[in-house]
View 1 (cartoon, rainbow, N blue to C red):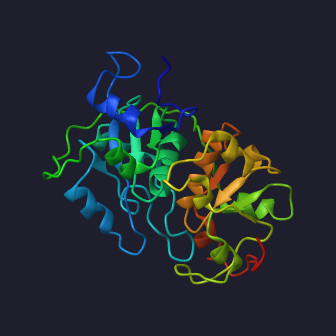
View 2: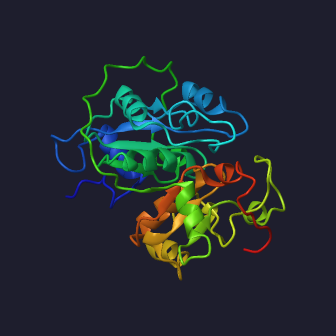
Length: 295
């Protein structure tokens, strides 16, 4: 049976994860069991996720904090709200969770997957070959009969072995790449809600609107009513008319846009680039154009 953790199999169901955690590993008795990383987070309350993890989590799960672990330092007037972290720092953090060079790692959250997708994207960007996301997150785990640990989290263990240098499995786009895409055939896909895209409502960033020429592709449209990813065919249909491998995905700060990258990979239609700085970096330079309205 093929390994269920790879760039071509980026989702795992709660039922399969239960087997991987508690039963015979799905791909053979000698394989490593996965490391679980809890990515729950609230943009308006940065401590909410870690408090939730401390109270209840999947068995043995470590906590990956969006701002502390999965973002680099914010540079006022230059970077977005959640910059790309330095590779060495990110690898060290994942090693502290117990993730070695080929250790299966499963990211999950409680918000439909955007924060888990950010962790997954970062691991894939580092070239890690065995990262995936728990489909529908912690709710699916509980619905499948999985128990949560409610005792105090265990202290960190020893560092996992060092990682070798690997080419990225998923690509990043810089603000220079986005500037070059203006007026070209390169698709720019905005994962925010239509209201934020149109500039009618902006609860986070100081400037409302979107990058000129972009199309609105809200990340919530990747999910069904239970918070699970749609079938591959339905996900692929959302990208109709766009050159997926050439596309650049963005959002407010490079989180929900990672969900759109994940959806494209789940659909098997390509690997778009992620503009990690996203809208919050674009607007740091007032000379960059903005647009409002449309869809």
